[in-house]
Length: 177
Image 1 (cartoon, rainbow, N blue to C red):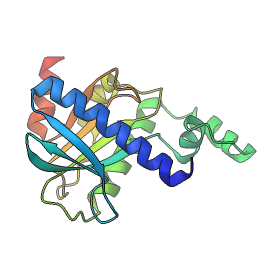
Image 2: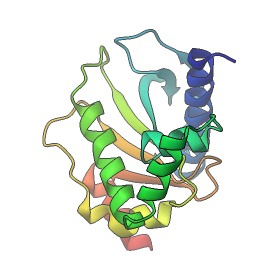
Image 3: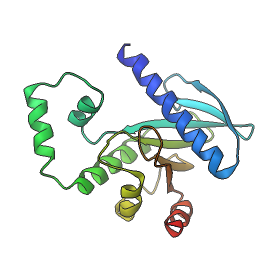
């Protein structure tokens, strides 16, 4: 599978996992995934019969961690970068990576009426509970194009989904724990 096909497959899988969890949790049907061309968010679906666009991102940590997680061949330099990362606190790496994704995606323009950002955590060192415990340290830009921001807690979605924005959803989540 080439890189572009792998990216589309990962995005569709992330969207499917998110949509299944959201539907189970809120009882609102999310159906019919299709992939979009550039300038539009990655994936579109129907949210209770209304079109909704999902911008999908994967949270790996660093480029070196992404290569390792995706099973790429690692150079000696990449091995050394991974070893150096072990010296940093896990929570610090998680927050920096999450903030970087949100900030980068917030600067993009999306040709969409309604777009949600869905971040799928791919790093096995982090879980939904870790993100919830440290979400008060996130830096959400004041201006961004997202109606909602969600995290899928792990690659398979076993730990569930976590709302990061709007803050009312996040605060409601925190009171449930």
